[in-house]
Length: 494
View 1: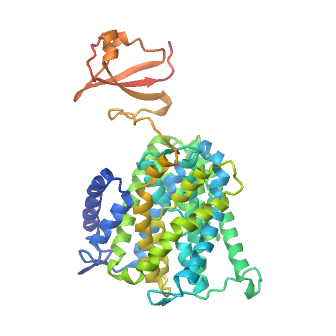
View 2 (view 1 turned 180 degrees about the vertical axis):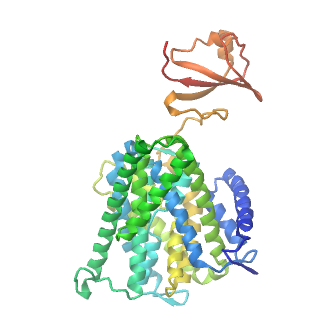
View 3 (view 1 turned 90 degrees about the vertical axis):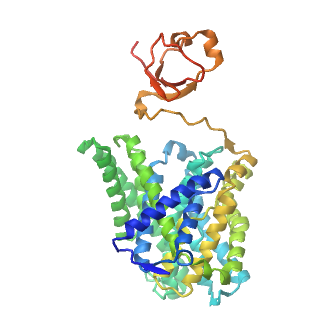
């Protein structure tokens, strides 16, 4: 067993080895439909104190790194949230991320206190402690949802894709705020604000949550509007600098939102949505690619760190209650919260609500929230962390690996067109739509040359790939079977 100081110069070497192993392991896991997060988490656990013996001593720095990773993931998710797709399900998504979270906390917390027992792993559990465990587990983890839905290219009916991404992006802040408030309540911090008597603590909590959400939304919206005004004024042409500017604005929204008592994560997410949908954002495609890479790196590092922090040898005392809580959360609490929150939307089919219930994925978010209780030295925090770790593994294994299967079983998945092979070319979207086509016997029967294809007006072949060769097309070029044609469809001046 050995201990590593996170500030030591060998940290980069250590992380490089872990990241290298995680990436290669993920390649293998993808073939078997294993979620990336699960692979990264297992690699981290194997390298941790109960595996190779790696021990992190600085929990505060670990929490900071993981919190930064979550902000980058939320930023990327917000930037790529297309409002024209999200608007039809905006109310449903907001209800799930607010009312749905509170219902999940109430239902799961009640189950933990009255059914699981007043003691878990030898640690006494109060009603506030039971609600804290439920709050940590209440959100649909944005990291897991964004990763699985996008990596598996899962297209869903009933606008479920935008609804789930909106919910997962906006309910992490709600769960985090609930966790912080309950930690303060358990630690004896006075929450009876606004001159309320002590018996009105519950009302105080509701008012605090409402204020945090309202202020977080307002700050995020204002920062996003400022960015929309700023972009054409400064006229930046460098996509890396534009990306860094967007990053600084998002971090400002997070920091300033927290400074004025709002929810910083929500402020960042709202600002990212406004910026991502702004027509004034220059080089949008390049900026999105930058943050896509940043999001993957953040996800990888934070999940690896959380895996290293885990102690599998400490899990047995809480294994049974953790499994009971996890199964109740998956099959009872989450479905009940979803169906109750979406009760006003009777036109939404029951099978769609059932699928939304199944996408109650846990991931790095709940583990990070549990780490918050450890850092603040809350009684029983180690047991909470281990419970959340077990439930996260259960969720990723049980739900994460079956999402495409369940979507198909409920007749909610849409067969997506295969990804376009662009042969490494990166062309602006404004030029038109790109498609690739493989030459078959039917085309050659009509004629051997490119001219014989008789392509409609506005369609041009801009590249031909033949084996490992790339050829510039011309009308008299003789085509061969299985040639790959890169086709551009757009406006012309003729």
